[in-house]
Length: 419
Image (tube, rainbow, N blue to C red; front, side, top):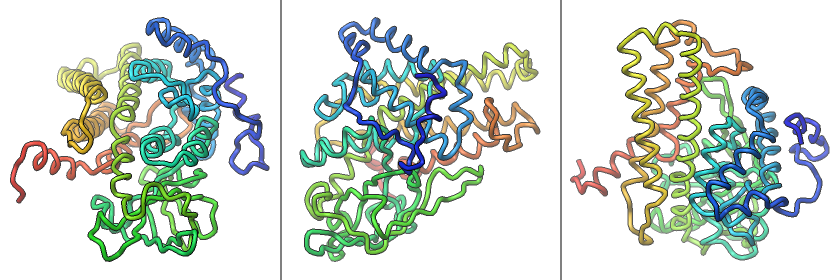
């Protein structure tokens, strides 16, 4: 299948552009059969991605925005699924290939090197959903929801609220039991790609009298259910990749509650833990590859800033810091912990990687000068410095604000007193 094919597969009758053909899970296993020889596995992944998503055509997915970008990513997930690389680390019985951490690192590394399409629209589906359903979901939930991810099903997250962002336990969305359903009323915010999602993971308060964490339950929400309204939020960059969710008398079947009633806070911790580790690794690998391509391009053009000792020094210091954070993420991936035992490493990784992202964007903006302060045109293959600079600050807030991470490190990691 060529990289043009994702356009021809759109079917207006589907409503979401997903091909209506039947999916039976991973097909050709020629790459995953190489799992016991890591070098051969790497070479297999490298050859496959070079054939299916050649870097010469990377502008096709780099230029895609909004719904078109999601459709590219759906195409990419289907292509990956053909060779068992859509959800490679998942158990076989739920549509995965049963690969381990070493294989995940190789896949992320090779995809980043090849400038292959990202899967940002599938962040929740590929990471949060298995991290939650495999330990806490019923067998029915696992078999119903997990295999469809590799087929292009987008999920979103309904956790944060206007008055409960950093203090997630203060959420006020209500879920009231009514026979074999729960009736949901409330509002969620900062829900990434929710305008394209088929399902959402949702936290709602089922016991308003209990202490904050004790009265919360965890649900799977059908985004097409009556009473669900999605309003995209326009960012300072002009993009709208997240939205507000307004829930009015939305009915969720009891069978779509994950875990026991009022025990959703414990389930949510499994979800939130997936925002670290492999997610951070994949993002840093792509950022490392992007930065390297940027430097190589500047060398070829003999850019003026390369003659400035201070700018070169700043760039190399940040480049070295990026490699240090990559090594720290690898340590996080290999870290084993007893259940319920808190580790400082995830907070350190989140804090350092997001801070590094903003400083790199700021340096590249200064290097670009006045021209870099323009936002657009958005169809360019090259990065837009001002766009990246403005966008970088979102990472200091999402997945746990940096201020909260500093408090966690100080109080729980270093045992420093409050105040």
